[in-house]
Image 1 (cartoon, rainbow, N blue to C red):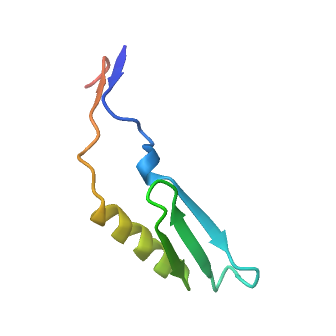
Image 2: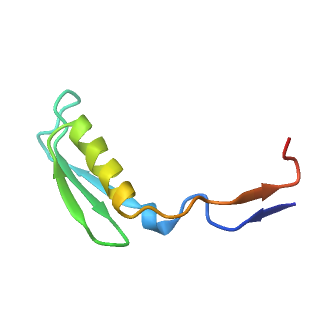
Length: 73
């Protein structure tokens, strides 16, 4: 039996990524939005997108999720 104190995928960490019509694999451009906070950030590259995600996660860090399962080894 498993007991999960927190969801593995909490709503706070739900994002929508919108790519611009002219985005290319080598030139990602668009906007990312956190669905819970509504915060929107523009990005101009894949690295920029990951930096925005990382910063948002750090700014709104939650405590570590607790997972308890019967088959811990």
